[in-house]
Length: 472
Image 1 (cartoon, one colour):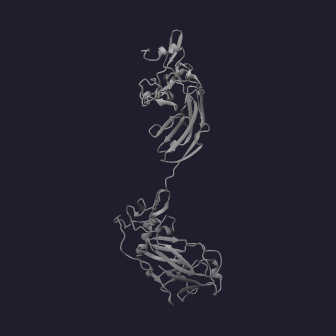
Image 2 (cartoon, rainbow, N blue to C red):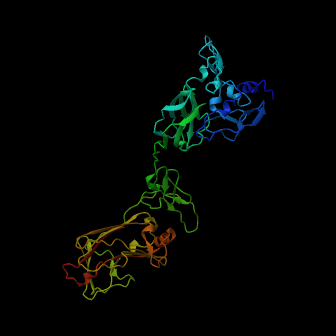
Image 3 (tube, one colour):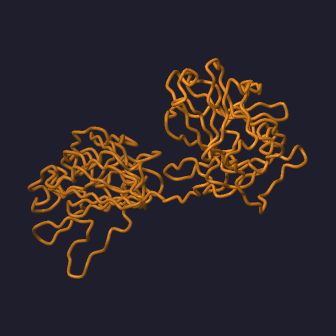
């Protein structure tokens, strides 16, 4: 190494370590170890050429060759990096100026010395002005205490410090480095430091420390600036298809079992007929094993009604096993659009209305429709727990329990969706669509409960009449 080209000769004359050994560092965490220690002429010299590191400290400058040097050594007319990258983009002497931006101007004789010699403990100016008034940094304008920023926005933090030489301002995040350029940029001009963070992310939130440093020492601004990052983006208004949606969360539609698509507005594979009343959204295709591909027909529904006008319309009274009740035990009559029954005194079993045969047979087209009927009963007593409606077909028995809050002495309306989810199997198995369709394909028996409280069998004629008006 040609020490004449470096500062060895100058160091020997000055008989003190270079600027790198003269920094007063009360924090003690960023002093770079020397690359080499030289002894000569009875003197010791520290020569720093920078330290290679995976990532530089917050108050260090990263050289093009990967080395890290103190930020305040940048543009001080010394090649601290070894590749002169710390002396690039340092500005030039302006017309009329006696010294360049990298130099300190002495008070007398228009003398210029390297900026790194200012306040280094040795008189380099002939008038000694480079060692006058030297003080460590003092933060006079700390950054804001709280800062709330939305994701994607730009955050700006400022900090000002005084001192001689003019302090350099650097920044830390949670005592580590801030993000790398170009997203994070730092400037320090005449003791005023600015940190600009573009495109803020959640990783940028935390405690930001302003650090002021010069050759006489360093100081941290107190308190830190606490930056909170929020997601301020508007919640997307997802438009969900009502018929196919079970629930909607913040950003997406939750489809019913057989509905699909981003908005749940179409039927999935092997299903058809999207309808709001269907708890599964669409109907799963069941075609007796012939095919799995189904589509909606152009059929329309009509009501199949049973209207009592002084005629029982073929309705009989039975128990749940379809054993007909003797007429002497139950007086059946039709009047004013209602079919009425008066249980006899000896009648203790639960009675059912047995619907006429014309409501049986192939009732596949009733799938997805509604079963609606009215009934009225008189009497008070313990509720009957037997099924409200019973369907039998193809050796399958399905039951519907119905509500338990019937009102005595007034009409009660019952409305049942004709889907498998409205029914249970008598044997306890789950009712599938296949079970339900098989039952409807060959409906042999259709029963509606006529006894609702046990007290009906013990009441007088005035308050024990059971009546029915049905529409299927």
